[in-house]
Structure formats: structure tokens, C-alpha cells
Amino acid sequence: MTEQASPDGLAEQLRAARQWSGLTQEQLAGLSTVSVRAIRDLEQGRVLHPRRATLRLLAGAMHLSDARRAALELAVEGAEAGTVMRETYGAELAPPPRPLRRLIGRAEELRALTALLATEHERLFSVVGLAGVGKTRLAQEAALALHSRDRTPVVWVDMNEDAPPAALRSPRSTLGGWARSVARGGPGLEELSSVIGGRVTLLVLDGHDGASRLAAPLLELLHACDRLKVLITTREPHRTPGSRLLPLGPLPVPAPAGAEAAGGSLPGDSLTAGQPAVELMLSHVSHMRPDLLPSDSLVRTAAEISRALDGVPRAMEAAASWLLLRSPAELLKTARTVPLDVVDDVTASGTEAGDGFAAQLSAAVAALDDGPAALLTGLSVLADGWSADEAAAELSASPAAVVRDVHALMLRGLVRRLPGGEDGTPRFGVLHLVRRPAAERTALLVRSPTLVS
Image (cartoon, rainbow, N blue to C red; front, side, top):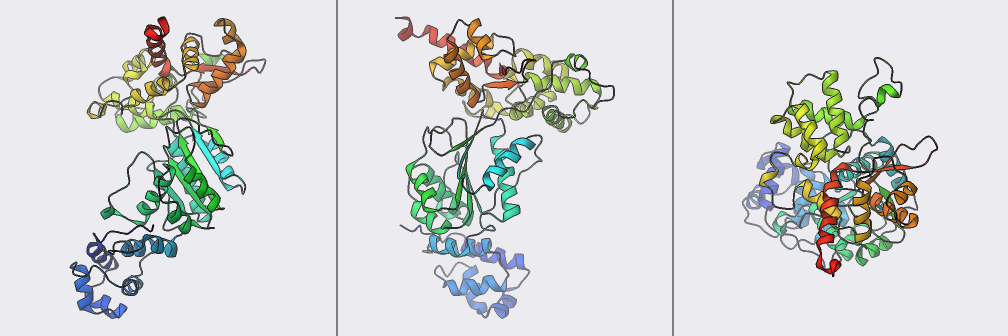
């Protein structure tokens, strides 16, 4: 069934468009051949069913973009949204959200993602990782690259938002509403597939968490639109055949204090060169405390803070806000001992329970099956740099089971890969941020009556 647009906003949109064009009602009438009286009645809300031809004459006279013209037509009572969107659909009507700040690091990940999105035969992708690691930001940059380079329409959907009221419909929200519904297994397939058709399009489902498999209507949409690509950001990998999985870990962290000298760094080497986590942490520090001079001491402290917080962008940004109350040295001490105390910024006390980053980290551990959860606790007591075989020996566990569960933990971003040893053996470490939640999860399992009985 074709969605009906809302009449609310037609008068306001037309008046705003005319004023944006710098025209009076009389001038618009002269350019469009629509009478002044008709324009006045439209702007005063007296006409709810104008002819599309009238709106097109007005839009042409005001040189409105396709997006503004579509928004104007969607505001008409009874307008068929599918028809409007099919006639105006294109890159201008479906742009990705513009990032608010530059991307630091992630050059290799961005290169890999954009290359995959540009391939002809790859059409379903999942960027999976821990909350706050930068999945959305990476997807934004990749989508913007495709949109700017190839004029690819990008239907961006925040899966954590609800559809806006009908009165707030716009071209972007109309497309997003259909896509959100389809991704959740609801209606909208007919409308969305008829608009996209055979046109190259990128659909981004940002924050599509909590579903182990993708909804059937979404897969039907991929079959119906043979040039559509779907990019999903999620904390849990989707077990869908044909999906290309791209795990995204935290930013690389600097070596422990003193390791630089042992590695033979040269005098005068930049303390931030090749260290995106340190660069990002310093950018937050400089904005939060511009009075702190970027001395070598401050840079080293920021590097240690970024290391204590695992190079997770959201954790570092929140931690920097605590510099309003603490010195860098005090912040570093807390980050090393109780990192979860600084990963929610100073405004987090006003949020609902479970919304904070610390709660999201705990939820990521709580969502694990018992086997990986118990292994995570055991691995947390080992010094960073263990191999899977060494961990199995230390924990008296089956090597095959350890490899399987470490793989599951890495996909979810709870364990990270470290530089290999001299023999090239892969080395790993548990994120500091999840060690306390892992211990609490295991303690809860031990106290559970169902396990004790």
C-alpha cells in the first residue's frame, strides 16, 4: 500500500522556499504564471489539495532542488509518497550525514571498506565491533566517499531511532522510514524497491543490533534491487549467508612507557607520529583544557591514558571531560585502576540507566554465552601478549575450545590482536575496559543456584 504524506507544513515550506529564493509573492507569480491569490492561499494554508502541476511551476520558478521540490510535494494531503520519490530519487535526495569532525586514524580500514563497496559482486556488509569503537564514523566516511565520488544515493537509517510522526515527513525520513521498517521485518518493501529499482544505491543500517539473522524483507529487497548494497553496523555479527564481515577493533595503542627507548626510537621523533589513539586523545584534551600546554610530559600522559582506555574513541572522549575536575596525572591513575569510572562523561548522570557507555560495555559481556564469558575472565588475569596455545596451557583448557571462544571474543571487540612475537605467533590481550564486567559476570554465574545445585 502506498504511504500517504501529511498536509502539515505545506504553507510553511512554500513560504520558506519563496523567502529563501528572495522573491515576493508578486515576483513569484510573474515567474511561475501562478496567480498571486493562489500563492497567497497556499501560504496561508487555505488550500490543502493543490495540483502537482501548480507546485512544479512554483518549484521551477524558485529553482528549487529535487530535495526541496520533493519535500514540498510530500507535504500535500493525499500525495503518493512512492510516486514523488520515484520521480525525484537520486544522489541529491539521499545524501549521507555529514561528519562533524575529521576522521583520525582508520586509513587502512577506510581503504578496505570503500574498496569492498566499490566491487560489483559484494552487496552485503557488516561492520561489527564494540560500542564506541567508531563503527558509525567509519561508515559515514565510506558512504560520503561513494556519494561524493560516484554520486551514489545513500539511504542512511539510524536503527536506534523511531520513525518520525507523519507530520514531520521529508524525503530523507520517508526513505529511512521504509528502510527501517523493512530491516525490522515490517512493511515498506514494495515502496522502497519501486523507488530504488535498478539504480546503484547504498543502504546503511546503523546500529542494527540484537538480531542474529537479517529480516526476510531486507533480503528480498536485495534480490529485488540488483544494484543495491547494504552496509550494517552492529555489535553482534549477523549470521547471514553471503554477508561480508568486517571486524573493527579499537585504535592501536602506544607501547608501554619505556618500550620506546628499548625499541630504539631516535631523539626528536614525534611522540604522536603513527599513533592515532594519542592524536585523538590530545585533540580531546586540547578542546577540554586549552590552558594545558602540549608538553612532552602531557603527551606521554595522554598516551598512557589512551593505552589504559584501549584506544576506544568514545572512552577517550568521555575521559577527557573529567579533566574539568582532575589533573592529567589523576585521570591517568583512575584510568589505570578503575577505567569504567571515567568512560561516562560528567553529563552522564542525567541519562537513563543503561544508556551510559559503562553500561553498554557490561551489556556486551552479559550477552556472551557462558563459555566465552568464563574464558574472558580467565584471560583477563593473564599478562597481555599471550597466544592461544599459551592461554590454553595456563588455564588448563582445550586448545580447540580456546581458539573457538577467542575467535568469538575478537569478533565482538572484547579481545584484541597485538603485535606478534619474534617467532611470528599471533599475540592477544583482553581490553582493560571489559575486565571488571567479565569478573562480575563470572561471579554471578558462580553464585547462580542453577549452577551450584
